[in-house]
Image (cartoon, rainbow, N blue to C red; front, side):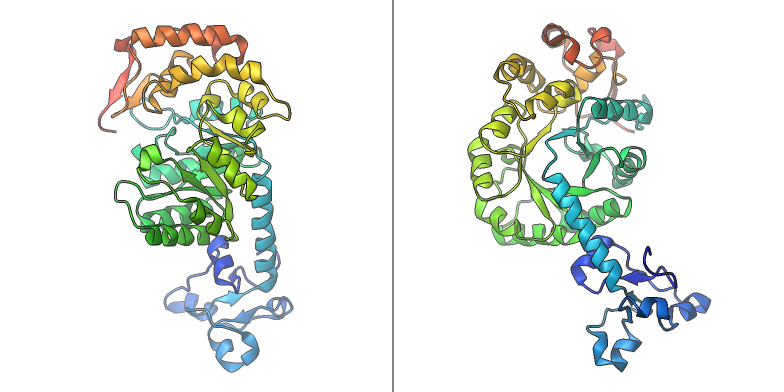
Length: 394
Protein backbone atom coordinates (compact mmCIF):
# COMPACT_ATOMS: atom_id res chain seq x y z
CA UNK A 1 0.00 0.00 0.00
CA UNK A 2 2.79 2.38 0.77
CA UNK A 3 4.30 2.08 -2.67
CA UNK A 4 1.35 1.53 -5.02
CA UNK A 5 -1.10 4.36 -5.60
CA UNK A 6 -3.35 2.58 -8.03
CA UNK A 7 -4.64 -0.09 -5.70
CA UNK A 8 -4.17 -1.55 -2.25
CA UNK A 9 -4.54 -5.08 -3.58
CA UNK A 10 -0.86 -5.95 -3.77
CA UNK A 11 0.69 -9.10 -2.37
CA UNK A 12 4.28 -10.28 -2.50
CA UNK A 13 5.28 -12.81 -5.11
CA UNK A 14 7.00 -15.09 -2.62
CA UNK A 15 4.81 -17.54 -0.74
CA UNK A 16 6.67 -17.06 2.52
CA UNK A 17 6.56 -13.29 2.41
CA UNK A 18 2.87 -13.44 1.68
CA UNK A 19 2.26 -15.45 4.81
CA UNK A 20 4.17 -12.92 6.84
CA UNK A 21 2.52 -9.83 5.40
CA UNK A 22 -0.97 -11.34 5.54
CA UNK A 23 -2.00 -8.81 2.94
CA UNK A 24 -3.49 -11.21 0.44
CA UNK A 25 -6.67 -9.84 -1.15
CA UNK A 26 -9.56 -12.22 -1.48
CA UNK A 27 -11.57 -11.17 -4.53
CA UNK A 28 -15.14 -10.05 -4.10
CA UNK A 29 -17.59 -12.62 -5.36
CA UNK A 30 -19.65 -11.40 -8.24
CA UNK A 31 -20.95 -7.93 -9.09
CA UNK A 32 -18.93 -4.77 -9.36
CA UNK A 33 -16.41 -5.99 -6.78
CA UNK A 34 -15.38 -8.85 -9.03
CA UNK A 35 -15.29 -6.59 -12.05
CA UNK A 36 -12.91 -4.25 -10.27
CA UNK A 37 -10.67 -7.14 -9.33
CA UNK A 38 -10.35 -8.09 -13.01
CA UNK A 39 -8.95 -4.73 -14.12
CA UNK A 40 -5.41 -4.92 -15.51
CA UNK A 41 -2.54 -3.47 -13.52
CA UNK A 42 -1.91 0.22 -14.01
CA UNK A 43 1.40 1.90 -14.73
CA UNK A 44 1.83 2.59 -11.03
CA UNK A 45 1.99 -1.14 -10.39
CA UNK A 46 3.95 -1.90 -13.52
CA UNK A 47 6.85 0.33 -12.55
CA UNK A 48 7.34 -1.77 -9.40
CA UNK A 49 7.30 -5.04 -11.31
CA UNK A 50 3.71 -5.89 -10.29
CA UNK A 51 1.98 -8.47 -12.45
CA UNK A 52 -1.49 -9.96 -12.65
CA UNK A 53 -1.22 -13.36 -11.04
CA UNK A 54 -3.90 -15.15 -13.05
CA UNK A 55 -4.68 -13.84 -16.53
CA UNK A 56 -1.43 -11.95 -17.12
CA UNK A 57 0.70 -14.86 -15.97
CA UNK A 58 -0.92 -17.02 -18.63
CA UNK A 59 -0.23 -14.40 -21.31
CA UNK A 60 3.45 -13.78 -20.62
CA UNK A 61 6.34 -15.90 -19.43
CA UNK A 62 7.85 -12.89 -17.73
CA UNK A 63 5.08 -12.81 -15.17
CA UNK A 64 6.59 -15.70 -13.27
CA UNK A 65 4.69 -18.26 -11.17
CA UNK A 66 0.95 -17.76 -10.80
CA UNK A 67 -0.82 -17.27 -7.51
CA UNK A 68 -4.18 -18.91 -7.01
CA UNK A 69 -7.24 -16.71 -7.10
CA UNK A 70 -8.58 -14.04 -9.37
CA UNK A 71 -7.48 -10.46 -9.35
CA UNK A 72 -4.46 -10.82 -7.08
CA UNK A 73 -1.53 -8.53 -7.78
CA UNK A 74 2.09 -9.14 -6.99
CA UNK A 75 4.05 -6.05 -5.91
CA UNK A 76 7.77 -6.74 -5.75
CA UNK A 77 8.55 -3.41 -4.09
CA UNK A 78 6.07 -4.07 -1.29
CA UNK A 79 7.40 -7.60 -0.87
CA UNK A 80 10.95 -6.28 -0.58
CA UNK A 81 10.03 -3.64 2.01
CA UNK A 82 8.14 -6.19 4.10
CA UNK A 83 11.07 -8.60 4.04
CA UNK A 84 13.33 -5.82 5.29
CA UNK A 85 10.75 -4.97 7.98
CA UNK A 86 10.61 -8.60 9.11
CA UNK A 87 14.39 -8.84 9.37
CA UNK A 88 14.49 -5.58 11.31
CA UNK A 89 11.98 -6.97 13.82
CA UNK A 90 14.05 -10.12 14.27
CA UNK A 91 17.28 -8.13 14.71
CA UNK A 92 15.60 -5.90 17.31
CA UNK A 93 14.39 -8.90 19.28
CA UNK A 94 17.92 -10.24 19.48
CA UNK A 95 18.79 -7.13 21.53
CA UNK A 96 15.74 -7.36 23.81
CA UNK A 97 16.95 -8.45 27.23
CA UNK A 98 13.94 -8.15 29.52
CA UNK A 99 10.55 -9.55 28.48
CA UNK A 100 7.75 -9.87 31.02
CA UNK A 101 5.25 -12.71 30.80
CA UNK A 102 2.41 -10.39 31.70
CA UNK A 103 -0.40 -11.12 34.15
CA UNK A 104 -3.98 -10.61 32.88
CA UNK A 105 -6.20 -8.85 35.48
CA UNK A 106 -9.96 -9.42 35.71
CA UNK A 107 -13.09 -7.63 36.79
CA UNK A 108 -15.56 -9.38 39.09
CA UNK A 109 -17.60 -10.25 36.00
CA UNK A 110 -14.63 -12.27 34.77
CA UNK A 111 -13.93 -9.92 31.88
CA UNK A 112 -10.57 -8.27 31.42
CA UNK A 113 -9.80 -5.29 33.61
CA UNK A 114 -8.17 -3.20 30.89
CA UNK A 115 -7.59 -0.22 33.18
CA UNK A 116 -5.52 -2.35 35.54
CA UNK A 117 -3.85 -4.04 32.57
CA UNK A 118 -2.78 -0.73 31.04
CA UNK A 119 -1.41 0.41 34.38
CA UNK A 120 0.62 -2.80 34.65
CA UNK A 121 2.10 -2.36 31.18
CA UNK A 122 2.87 1.32 31.78
CA UNK A 123 4.70 0.46 35.02
CA UNK A 124 6.66 -2.23 33.17
CA UNK A 125 7.80 0.26 30.55
CA UNK A 126 8.78 2.80 33.23
CA UNK A 127 10.99 0.19 34.90
CA UNK A 128 12.92 -0.79 31.77
CA UNK A 129 10.98 -3.78 30.43
CA UNK A 130 11.46 -4.06 26.66
CA UNK A 131 8.87 -6.65 25.69
CA UNK A 132 5.74 -8.41 26.95
CA UNK A 133 4.24 -11.83 26.36
CA UNK A 134 0.47 -11.42 26.00
CA UNK A 135 -1.74 -14.34 26.96
CA UNK A 136 1.06 -16.68 27.98
CA UNK A 137 0.84 -19.18 30.82
CA UNK A 138 1.30 -16.33 33.30
CA UNK A 139 -1.34 -14.30 31.45
CA UNK A 140 -3.67 -17.33 31.49
CA UNK A 141 -4.06 -17.62 27.76
CA UNK A 142 -5.09 -21.21 28.44
CA UNK A 143 -8.24 -19.87 30.14
CA UNK A 144 -9.15 -17.45 27.34
CA UNK A 145 -11.28 -17.88 24.28
CA UNK A 146 -9.37 -17.10 21.09
CA UNK A 147 -11.55 -14.00 20.65
CA UNK A 148 -10.41 -12.74 24.06
CA UNK A 149 -6.85 -13.67 23.28
CA UNK A 150 -6.63 -11.80 19.97
CA UNK A 151 -8.51 -8.82 21.38
CA UNK A 152 -5.95 -8.48 24.19
CA UNK A 153 -3.06 -8.68 21.72
CA UNK A 154 -4.73 -6.02 19.56
CA UNK A 155 -5.34 -3.78 22.58
CA UNK A 156 -1.71 -4.10 23.70
CA UNK A 157 -0.39 -3.26 20.24
CA UNK A 158 -2.75 -0.29 19.89
CA UNK A 159 -1.92 1.14 23.32
CA UNK A 160 1.77 0.30 23.68
CA UNK A 161 3.09 -1.15 20.42
CA UNK A 162 5.34 1.83 19.72
CA UNK A 163 6.94 1.65 23.15
CA UNK A 164 7.44 -2.05 23.70
CA UNK A 165 7.72 -5.34 21.79
CA UNK A 166 4.44 -7.26 21.79
CA UNK A 167 4.73 -11.05 21.58
CA UNK A 168 1.44 -12.90 21.28
CA UNK A 169 1.26 -16.38 22.73
CA UNK A 170 -0.57 -17.90 19.78
CA UNK A 171 0.88 -21.40 20.01
CA UNK A 172 -1.32 -24.44 20.48
CA UNK A 173 -1.18 -28.22 20.55
CA UNK A 174 -3.33 -28.04 17.39
CA UNK A 175 -1.39 -26.88 14.34
CA UNK A 176 -4.62 -25.65 12.78
CA UNK A 177 -5.42 -23.48 15.80
CA UNK A 178 -1.83 -22.23 16.08
CA UNK A 179 -1.82 -21.15 12.43
CA UNK A 180 -5.19 -19.42 12.64
CA UNK A 181 -4.40 -17.61 15.90
CA UNK A 182 -0.93 -16.60 14.72
CA UNK A 183 -2.32 -15.20 11.47
CA UNK A 184 -4.88 -13.22 13.46
CA UNK A 185 -2.18 -11.99 15.84
CA UNK A 186 -0.10 -10.62 12.98
CA UNK A 187 -3.22 -9.12 11.43
CA UNK A 188 -3.70 -7.01 14.57
CA UNK A 189 -0.07 -5.96 14.68
CA UNK A 190 1.89 -8.16 17.10
CA UNK A 191 5.63 -8.11 16.50
CA UNK A 192 6.24 -11.83 17.01
CA UNK A 193 4.53 -14.97 18.23
CA UNK A 194 5.44 -17.40 21.01
CA UNK A 195 5.18 -21.01 19.89
CA UNK A 196 5.11 -23.93 22.30
CA UNK A 197 5.48 -27.54 21.22
CA UNK A 198 2.22 -29.54 21.13
CA UNK A 199 1.42 -30.73 24.66
CA UNK A 200 -0.80 -33.50 26.04
CA UNK A 201 -1.56 -34.89 22.58
CA UNK A 202 2.16 -35.21 21.90
CA UNK A 203 3.48 -35.96 18.44
CA UNK A 204 6.56 -37.53 16.85
CA UNK A 205 9.72 -35.59 16.14
CA UNK A 206 8.74 -35.47 12.48
CA UNK A 207 5.32 -34.07 13.37
CA UNK A 208 6.90 -31.58 15.77
CA UNK A 209 9.27 -30.37 13.08
CA UNK A 210 6.47 -29.87 10.57
CA UNK A 211 4.33 -28.10 13.17
CA UNK A 212 7.07 -25.55 13.88
CA UNK A 213 7.89 -25.08 10.21
CA UNK A 214 4.26 -24.24 9.46
CA UNK A 215 3.91 -21.66 12.25
CA UNK A 216 7.28 -20.14 11.43
CA UNK A 217 6.10 -19.61 7.87
CA UNK A 218 3.49 -17.16 9.18
CA UNK A 219 5.90 -14.65 10.72
CA UNK A 220 8.65 -14.03 13.31
CA UNK A 221 8.40 -16.51 16.18
CA UNK A 222 10.11 -17.38 19.43
CA UNK A 223 9.97 -21.08 20.27
CA UNK A 224 9.18 -22.10 23.84
CA UNK A 225 10.64 -25.19 25.48
CA UNK A 226 9.20 -26.04 28.90
CA UNK A 227 9.33 -29.85 29.38
CA UNK A 228 7.71 -29.85 32.86
CA UNK A 229 4.51 -28.49 31.28
CA UNK A 230 4.55 -30.22 27.89
CA UNK A 231 6.16 -33.54 28.95
CA UNK A 232 8.24 -33.36 25.76
CA UNK A 233 11.62 -31.73 25.30
CA UNK A 234 12.35 -29.97 22.01
CA UNK A 235 15.59 -31.64 20.88
CA UNK A 236 18.62 -29.43 20.32
CA UNK A 237 19.20 -30.73 16.80
CA UNK A 238 15.64 -29.70 15.88
CA UNK A 239 16.15 -26.17 17.21
CA UNK A 240 19.43 -25.92 15.29
CA UNK A 241 17.63 -26.88 12.10
CA UNK A 242 14.71 -24.51 12.73
CA UNK A 243 17.10 -21.66 13.52
CA UNK A 244 17.85 -21.46 9.80
CA UNK A 245 14.25 -20.51 9.05
CA UNK A 246 13.95 -16.89 7.95
CA UNK A 247 11.36 -16.16 10.71
CA UNK A 248 13.19 -17.79 13.61
CA UNK A 249 13.73 -15.26 16.41
CA UNK A 250 15.14 -17.57 19.07
CA UNK A 251 13.97 -19.80 21.90
CA UNK A 252 12.70 -19.34 25.42
CA UNK A 253 14.46 -22.18 27.19
CA UNK A 254 13.42 -23.63 30.56
CA UNK A 255 15.71 -26.69 30.53
CA UNK A 256 18.53 -24.95 32.39
CA UNK A 257 21.62 -22.89 31.74
CA UNK A 258 23.67 -25.74 30.29
CA UNK A 259 21.16 -25.87 27.44
CA UNK A 260 21.22 -22.08 27.14
CA UNK A 261 25.01 -22.13 26.89
CA UNK A 262 24.87 -24.80 24.18
CA UNK A 263 22.54 -22.71 22.04
CA UNK A 264 24.55 -19.54 22.41
CA UNK A 265 27.66 -21.47 21.34
CA UNK A 266 25.75 -22.22 18.14
CA UNK A 267 24.84 -18.54 17.68
CA UNK A 268 21.17 -19.23 18.50
CA UNK A 269 19.43 -16.45 20.40
CA UNK A 270 18.12 -17.76 23.70
CA UNK A 271 16.12 -16.32 26.59
CA UNK A 272 16.04 -17.99 29.98
CA UNK A 273 12.56 -18.99 31.10
CA UNK A 274 13.65 -19.48 34.72
CA UNK A 275 13.64 -16.44 37.02
CA UNK A 276 15.99 -18.03 39.52
CA UNK A 277 18.61 -18.78 36.85
CA UNK A 278 18.16 -15.70 34.66
CA UNK A 279 21.09 -13.64 35.98
CA UNK A 280 23.60 -16.44 35.43
CA UNK A 281 22.01 -17.30 32.09
CA UNK A 282 22.57 -13.74 30.92
CA UNK A 283 26.08 -13.21 32.28
CA UNK A 284 27.62 -16.69 32.27
CA UNK A 285 25.70 -18.75 29.70
CA UNK A 286 25.35 -16.07 27.02
CA UNK A 287 21.56 -15.69 26.99
CA UNK A 288 20.11 -12.60 25.36
CA UNK A 289 17.99 -12.11 28.45
CA UNK A 290 14.96 -13.50 30.24
CA UNK A 291 11.24 -14.00 29.82
CA UNK A 292 10.31 -13.27 33.41
CA UNK A 293 7.33 -13.82 35.68
CA UNK A 294 8.87 -12.11 38.72
CA UNK A 295 9.30 -8.90 36.71
CA UNK A 296 5.55 -8.38 37.03
CA UNK A 297 6.39 -7.42 40.63
CA UNK A 298 10.03 -6.33 40.56
CA UNK A 299 10.71 -5.19 36.98
CA UNK A 300 13.40 -2.74 38.09
CA UNK A 301 15.38 -5.54 39.71
CA UNK A 302 15.32 -7.67 36.58
CA UNK A 303 16.25 -4.68 34.45
CA UNK A 304 19.40 -4.38 36.57
CA UNK A 305 20.04 -8.14 36.49
CA UNK A 306 19.88 -8.09 32.69
CA UNK A 307 22.24 -5.12 32.43
CA UNK A 308 25.83 -5.11 31.24
CA UNK A 309 27.34 -5.69 34.69
CA UNK A 310 26.92 -8.75 36.86
CA UNK A 311 24.81 -8.26 39.99
CA UNK A 312 25.56 -11.32 42.18
CA UNK A 313 24.45 -9.69 45.45
CA UNK A 314 21.16 -8.44 44.03
CA UNK A 315 20.56 -11.82 42.41
CA UNK A 316 21.13 -13.57 45.74
CA UNK A 317 18.81 -11.11 47.50
CA UNK A 318 15.75 -12.03 45.41
CA UNK A 319 16.10 -15.81 45.44
CA UNK A 320 13.87 -16.42 48.46
CA UNK A 321 11.16 -14.24 46.93
CA UNK A 322 11.39 -16.11 43.62
CA UNK A 323 11.13 -19.44 45.46
CA UNK A 324 8.01 -18.17 47.25
CA UNK A 325 6.52 -16.94 43.97
CA UNK A 326 6.71 -20.44 42.48
CA UNK A 327 5.77 -22.42 45.60
CA UNK A 328 2.59 -23.38 43.71
CA UNK A 329 2.28 -23.73 39.92
CA UNK A 330 2.52 -20.45 38.04
CA UNK A 331 0.50 -18.15 37.83
CA UNK A 332 -0.92 -18.70 41.35
CA UNK A 333 1.93 -16.87 43.09
CA UNK A 334 2.07 -13.84 40.80
CA UNK A 335 -1.73 -13.51 40.84
CA UNK A 336 -1.74 -13.51 44.64
CA UNK A 337 1.22 -11.16 44.79
CA UNK A 338 -0.28 -8.52 42.49
CA UNK A 339 -3.54 -8.72 44.46
CA UNK A 340 -1.66 -8.13 47.72
CA UNK A 341 0.00 -5.09 46.12
CA UNK A 342 -3.33 -3.64 45.03
CA UNK A 343 -2.32 -3.78 41.36
CA UNK A 344 -5.19 -6.07 40.37
CA UNK A 345 -8.59 -6.95 41.81
CA UNK A 346 -8.84 -10.13 43.93
CA UNK A 347 -10.43 -12.12 41.10
CA UNK A 348 -9.27 -15.58 40.02
CA UNK A 349 -10.48 -17.73 37.17
CA UNK A 350 -10.58 -21.39 38.19
CA UNK A 351 -8.76 -23.69 38.34
CA UNK A 352 -6.39 -21.15 39.96
CA UNK A 353 -6.89 -20.21 43.61
CA UNK A 354 -4.88 -17.77 45.75
CA UNK A 355 -2.26 -18.43 48.40
CA UNK A 356 -3.66 -18.78 51.90
CA UNK A 357 -2.99 -16.41 54.78
CA UNK A 358 0.18 -18.11 56.02
CA UNK A 359 1.76 -18.06 52.56
CA UNK A 360 0.73 -14.45 52.05
CA UNK A 361 2.34 -13.47 55.33
CA UNK A 362 5.63 -15.02 54.22
CA UNK A 363 5.43 -13.19 50.88
CA UNK A 364 4.61 -9.91 52.60
CA UNK A 365 7.77 -10.15 54.69
CA UNK A 366 9.91 -11.01 51.66
CA UNK A 367 8.55 -8.12 49.61
CA UNK A 368 8.99 -5.67 52.47
CA UNK A 369 12.61 -6.78 52.70
CA UNK A 370 13.06 -5.95 49.00
CA UNK A 371 11.74 -2.47 49.69
CA UNK A 372 11.08 0.14 47.03
CA UNK A 373 11.91 -2.26 44.19
CA UNK A 374 8.45 -3.83 44.67
CA UNK A 375 5.58 -2.34 42.69
CA UNK A 376 2.73 -1.35 45.01
CA UNK A 377 4.93 -1.56 48.12
CA UNK A 378 2.87 1.06 49.97
CA UNK A 379 -0.33 -0.95 49.43
CA UNK A 380 0.96 -4.39 50.42
CA UNK A 381 -1.38 -6.29 52.73
CA UNK A 382 -2.86 -9.68 53.51
CA UNK A 383 -5.99 -10.34 51.43
CA UNK A 384 -8.56 -12.33 53.39
CA UNK A 385 -10.29 -15.36 51.88
CA UNK A 386 -13.67 -13.65 51.83
CA UNK A 387 -12.32 -10.85 49.63
CA UNK A 388 -11.49 -13.12 46.72
CA UNK A 389 -13.88 -13.79 43.86
CA UNK A 390 -13.27 -17.26 42.43
CA UNK A 391 -14.93 -17.70 39.04
CA UNK A 392 -15.91 -21.05 37.58
CA UNK A 393 -17.92 -19.55 34.69
CA UNK A 394 -17.26 -16.26 32.96
